[in-house]
Amino acid sequence: MTELAAPAIRDWDYPRGTASVLLMLRFAEERGIAPERLLPATSPEELRAPERQLDAHQELAVVRALCSTAGSGDDVALDLGSRYRASTFGIFGFACISSTTMRDAMEFALRYLDLSFTFCIPHVELDGDGVGLVLDDARVPPDVARFLVLRDLSAIHTVMRDLLPDISLRRLEFRHPVPDTVDSYVDVFGLAPEFGAQQHRATLDPALLDRPLPQANDQTVALCAAQCDELVARRRRRSGTAQLVRERLVRLGGVDAGMDAIARQLTMSARTLRRRLTEAGTGYRQLLDEVRHALAEEMLNTGVLSVEDVALRLGYAEASSFIYAFKRWTGTTPAAYVRRSVPRVPPGR
Image (cartoon, rainbow, N blue to C red):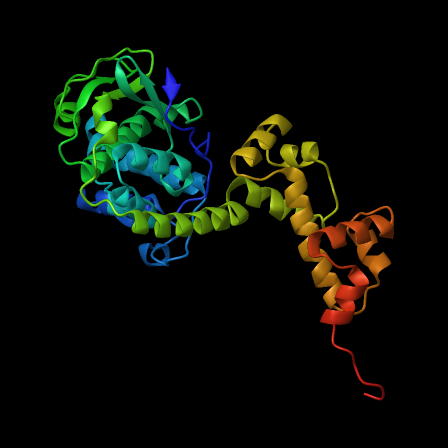
């Protein structure tokens, strides 16, 4: 067995756009459920701002509210998943549609997975049975795991059909027990699944991987990839677990409390914190440097604090260590930065 490509993330705790939550609010409204019952503190209008982002836990809260109001049955989850179209994913979805083949689209989707709305992490495996799309729900909270497995796989299948309308599954397996009826499964996936399996897996004909996509355009994909790179970088910098760490370091004034202390504040182990930061494309020392850099420039820009004062406030034992770090961040010394940035007041004024 070989993996087509490694997913860019290994955990659902990544920052997200608002399209998925807006879709769930519309889905609930169709069932007579007011948006404020799913998202009490925020109006749908606020979520439509182009740059608005949500923490994954906020979206998870909406999922839980939807389950408690609209129901958590398999039919609800599958119906919800089928509402996700390639266009729901914005530039990410447009890139997938414009890919040359289904293989290219899958590789692109895995590379930019944190621009999706999945909670279950997909893996694409190639073996003698065909192409296996396996959903990993190991880190999904148990109370919504089954619902999200069905929603996510239904959404993935729907998007794949947007890309290649005649696509079909060879086999479908789920770990959970046989439900009372499989009608909704057949409606969405086109076949009855096997239940009580070892993993959640959809199997496709490997020949589908190299089928040309009807809307393929290499130039469009290249343009979309550049925009996706920028969007991913911006989200990783400003949200999720990394943002929680960043906020705590700012409250400490850039003083290094140590990753163990920050992890305790976030009610997780240092190992979990390290893993989540790695999955977000950053690390504790990188975030500490980022915060210290920003605070250092703010303090130096006041024009009233000496280099030694700034070093002390940021927790450096010696000014020389701070000067070395500042030069690494900016390419110049703190003194040179002040001369260039802080306006001089003419004598006698």
